[in-house]
Length: 288
Image 1 (tube, rainbow, N blue to C red):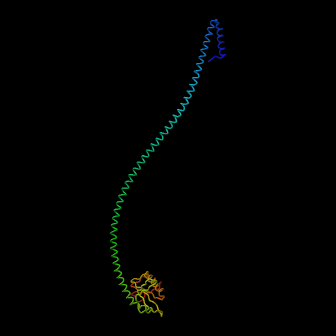
Image 2: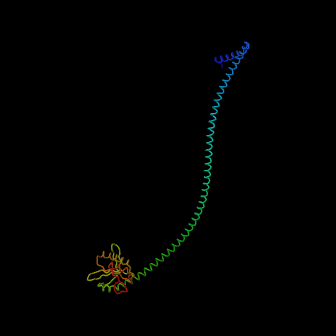
Image 3: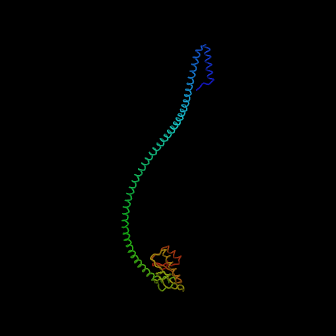
């Protein structure tokens, strides 16, 4: 680096002033001048070195700034990594807690499975007992069916015997009615020669009449139609009236309706009056 004219003039002036003050000789001045020139060269070299150092310092400072910036970024990155590490640890803790809960849930499920298996074993045992009970019931049912079958045969046999007895009683009651009713009907003004069992076919259906005969009532021909029952109830009266009405529709004749039996229920009397049916019993001399 060279001295500027101004700097050179300044230095020379200072030197001359110094020389003047000191009243140096010319020889000394020349020596001093030479020394100044040498100092000037040294100063120039020093200035050059200083400039180089300044340039190096500048580059060093720039490098330091770059390193400082890099350090700052490194610290920021480290902070980011530290934050990420913190979050990772938190996540690991969460996963560890979740794993713990999962293991607890697995243990609960294992316990529930154990209880389920125990319950299944209990149900299997109960099912086994149920099947045994069903087999017992099936065996009992089989025996019951056998007993019912035997009882049914017995009832059937008994029904035949009862039917025979009923038929015997019925025919006996019919015979009694044939003997007693003509005279009782004459007391009512109805002349009938004989009463007998007859059958009518009405609309393809056979209608059986226990006591039936031709009669004359107040000069009019009537058909006497009677039913024989050992005990007469209101429902018997209704059934007989339905049968008698079929005969009326079939023959188109006037009929006299009567029922004959050993006993008459009070309800039958009311029903007979509403249906215009005369009731007779074997032990009374006239109608009920």
